[in-house]
Image (cartoon, rainbow, N blue to C red; front, side):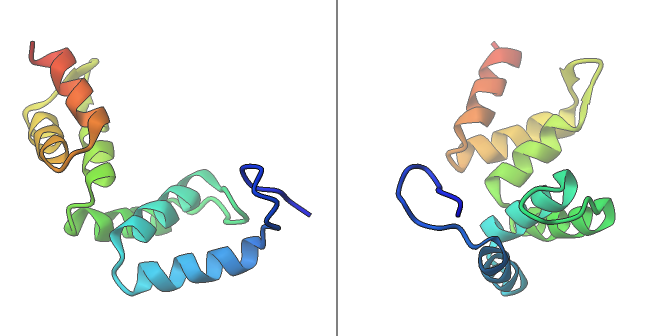
Length: 110
């Protein structure tokens, strides 16, 4: 039995993945982002699937999911500096309340 965060609830990874996939398929951006991350990293019983991850990230990005915008921004840094597109995405994520984007913007745009 697995215990999550000390709440004494048994984890059922298969059931959790089932509901995550249903939510993602029904357009819930948060689920799309997490499913993409699990496929990218091979977590929670998912195989590493770069193409599947990219597909789900694309869906979350199309919905302007704030963490996905941030992730896309970070991946557009060149030589450790944000590109103009990265700054645009960071601003959008920051405006939506994503604190990590605000921090990165403060760091690079004094």
